[in-house]
Length: 136
Image (cartoon, helix red, strand yellow):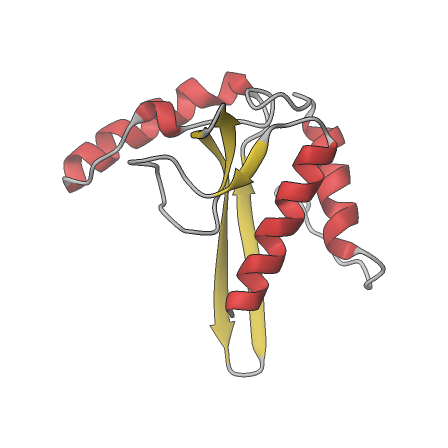
């Protein structure tokens, strides 16, 4: 399980770096959906906004690795507006500036470019079976 987390977050870090984003594995303080395999932007020596979270669902004989990746800076205020009151209601610390995006980290703001690069890296010669939201 740990190997899948490590491999997936490293793949995301490599792809986003290749696209020009300044990123590393880790998360800023008081980030949404905490996890040590998050991918965040870098500001000097400090972690900046979180771009991606990686999750797994494991059952006997099967594992699903998934993630959520924010591409455009325009999405950050909407995420902050949704997450801030939820975390406040839960009594969990949340810093709205912990929300980041690929474009804020220096990468492209075109979701199609980022999607294609991430998909290519994750598939990497394997049989391709990808379903995007709305393709049902």
